[in-house]
Length: 174
Image (cartoon, rainbow, N blue to C red; front, top):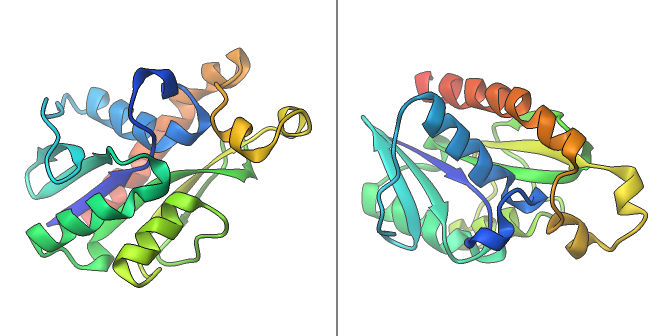
């Protein structure tokens, strides 16, 4: 069994914000693969399932995502090597995708939360670049990660999310 986690913040006001890139990636993957989310959250997350793969969008807000991740891992007895976390990274150039089988949080509070709950950073992750130097010069980090994508960036999202979806499929098949 595998667990795929998209990080983001619950609520419509966060749709299409940089911090919701993980949610966007899973929603796009679900649309392309004709999957559907269960209406009611379970174990602190919106979830969906396809065969022996569970997908979740934690509902405790980005900075406390680890609670739901730990609950799903414990309930389904999923080892660290069989989870995949998808998150934004404003230090990466917009649209750049970086997969790592292990790593450090590197300032990402969602990953810090998961590390804290799991007592390790030894799990796979995909970081999706949301960097935009021009905008970052105009606002602090919190305002930046909660800002909406520009129209030009939004136009690029299908291409980027397709690539993330390919990475998800590759992970599932390993």
